Image 1 (cartoon, rainbow over the protein chains, first blue to last red):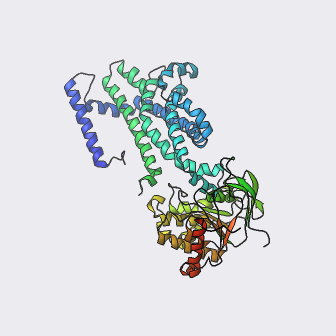
Image 2 (image 1 turned 30 degrees about the horizontal axis):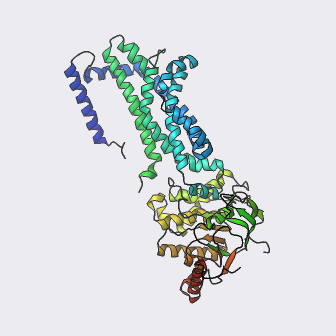
Image 3 (image 1 turned 180 degrees about the vertical axis):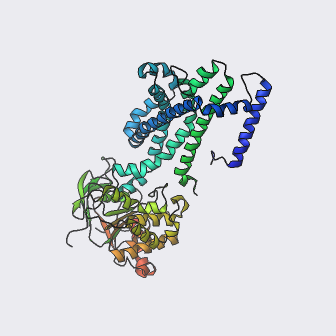
Length: 250
Length: 265
């Protein structure tokens, strides 16, 4: 599968990454691009203190946003996928709203929901919501009527259809949507954390390190943010492979 | 038994109500019978099966099975479709157990599952049918990894694990090669002899209709008003296929469908 990385490939990637980083640091040769051997020890030290705490806060926010998006978008997608009438009237609205970059609502959301976690989580969830909604709707609409009828003939009503058909049918799609949009989610997280807050990786990178010229610590923060994105991406990819085992089997 | 197993009484149905497929159509099936339904494409043979299965509701008239009007899928009725009936993400075992799992999900509520339904060991039941149908060594495979015949046997195992008293089949074997098709037809004959399950099979294959249908319902271009029935008492024995009578019935049915003969009323 396309996102499968084996052990050796991974090692080569990390080595190459460190080489490029070193090369750039030597080429530019200014404090704004420190080499890896200066950053990594700082990262290890900071993770045990301030940075570790900020990373946990950020991870908590992005995971809450994922949870919020899944529990709202998946049922909505299933309903739209099952009802042609609802889909006909509501999907144009979704198609209209979907491409709007949700980040532009940051000021509005900060005013309406305050500067706490709720506003950050809501904004990220809004981005994930549309991604998930669209794929779940397609998945539910793509189920063959023969399949639904044959399961109904086994006695399944609405609840059993949900449990045995719609849920397992849409789960891989939900995970695919999350995997492709988790990068955006972390990027938006970064932006929200640079406003009106005193916690999170965004705050750490911009306020605590960049603005006071602690570049090594700033890079430790960037590394933490990258690892957060990579971790989420890998875990989602792993789950996706597990639930989509049947797609690979042939 | 004096009461018919299935009564279709004055049923009118059409996806477009202005163009009914069935118009005041009445038909009945007695206990223990095996029926085949045949006719050209678009004659409504699959629609008839969906009406019997409770997946479609007639616009007027009613369908009564086992003494009760059918308003939703009846738990004692089994349905086997041509393809796409298996969950692609579930293994053979999970597919075969699906009906039993759905029954456990609802409990014996009389609506989704028969009121009298009690089963002590559903796994043993699934295993029994998978072994019986030669699928046990494939139990961890997904439908996409099976041959067409194995897929259909999985669908049959899933349905038979629920011990239906009525088995409805919509072109169940038409996507299979000739040998596989015949072996599954033989399987249906054997199962009927063992369990006495009432069968209604929709097919466009003349040989299949004659081999499996002791009575053959011939449908024509819609709207269908009167049932035309060919009686075929020889069906239901394994060696019927090689008999002179079988060939005669096939020829007769072929002419009938080709319009060379008047349909008997």
